[in-house]
Length: 574
Image (tube, rainbow, N blue to C red; front, side, top):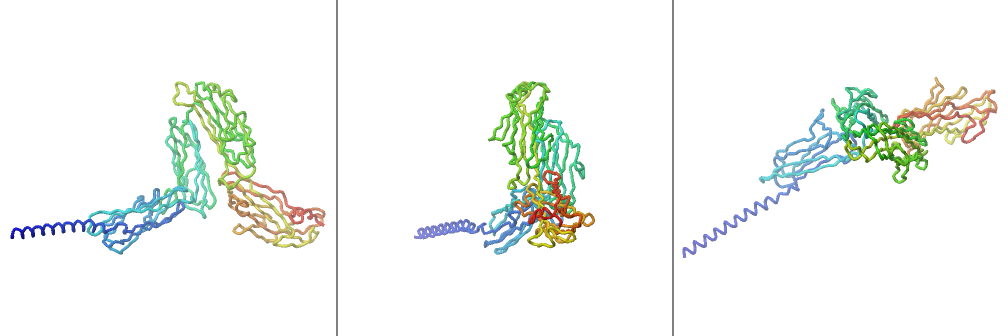
């Protein structure tokens, strides 16, 4: 009986131990699982779109929405690649920022802010990240959470354009051309441009001269709408097939240091030197054209080797919406209208059957540019021609599968602005005063409208002007379009001047036209009887095409009283 009772007690003790073990295991697993790291809130607040150079504030927010204390919280915030990180009144070279929170009780929250500038190119997506590790309550597990924020660069205040020859023979002279322009909403100060040259490049000349060493140009003030060009010429050396990359960098002064904001790069391949190919447009490598111009291309070729080069083919690809291909004279080559490519072979150029050493020659073709300008496309107008001379008959002692030479040329296009002059006796806004036809000894007032349309590229330094002849009086009554500069009269020179500064592309086409209105008067003398009176002479519109760098001048014939828009032919004095 005692033994049976002892056995029963033992069984109950074992059962109790098992229950306690099960409870412990369940408490361990389900107690730990009751903590949800999803209730540890972490986020990054900041812009989803920005411009290069914008100061960005990233706000890190965190909160404990669990029932346990959060301990040893370690945060690592990573700025987007190539950002300029601000640390008070200085730039920090580190893109990562660390901070810690020793204890965050249930219901508590906090935030931390970091500031910097974004750098890059239009369309770049810049990602900021936050990573946090922590412990919860008495749990020994180290938890981690992360969040990110993407910001798209939607605007580049100072677009950069860098050109270099696509191919060059080792030891040849090459030219790097770097253009920049302020397209922001205001002036920009303390800028610096830097050219990072490839290995093997030795600069020989600069325009303009650099500010320091041979690769730095400082620009203290770049006004809204203005720009510039940096040209560097030098010798480029390297092994055949090597790619030589030059990089242009825009830097801005932040506090006491310059920081990189924008970069652009272009590469030149060291080409096979056996063949030489040159391409000219209207006898120039950098001809700037006007809409409607005839472009005469000349391709000059030469065998620089000691080998006979057999079975050569020359192709030229023409690219640009301004080409009027219906006017193309292919110069004996075959024009493929689907690919916009001209081909010459031995059938059209006998030299190409067997180009003997040092033999040189040329082929040519011409095409007319369209007279009108389509402003819905690229902001800057240009056409391109890319030529390639090649043969697969490689001399035995020469490596490779092909002997070739390439050359290309880009022709920038300007479109003439339109300077319309209209004059009225009875203007709809200003009315009329005095007799018409004009009478000797009587004052008649005329209203003159200047209208300017620009279908081409942006222009700078734009000015319209005219001279008031003797006997024509300035009435000091003027009107201009909203937001447009005032028109002025210089009495010392009897000159009407409308200084516009920058004239945007599309003015009068996709944008409102520029219009200035002013009044002049005449009181004819007896010797003017039976003749019209000249109201304005030496009418002129001038400015510089920002893209092509061409000075554009539009001259307009003199305006007299017979040229009235509302009363034509009634201006002879009585």
